[in-house]
Image: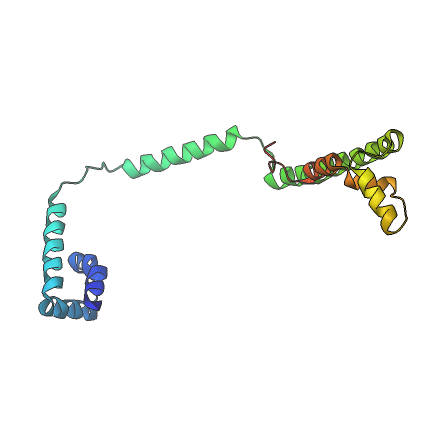
Length: 169
């Protein structure tokens, strides 16, 4: 029922006296007409009465001032314990290296693999591809094409160009 929803939303404001006059009159009408809402209201009123009788903690007059000083002291200690570097400058310096290092590593692996592939001959997996290429177009594969088919080189290039932490290292 929509009346239950209204009562549940406004019960705290009603019991604490913060409910506006229009809502208060609507609240009173619902309580008079709906027995379920009246029971709910009586239960909540009784619980509110019990809670309001529980004594709260005694707070000394200077508690809030001493708490504020304690917080400011801790914040000040953290600021002095950290280095004086600005975060924007730090991230800018490291950001370029996150791109350049994997790129340089990939380029070096590419160059080394080019020099090795010419000296060692075709890799085992490229013999079938070379035969099929010669059957299709009659053209022989270049050393770059053999390099792309070398799965280890492709995997190493992929790993070195991936963001840090992607593969767990």
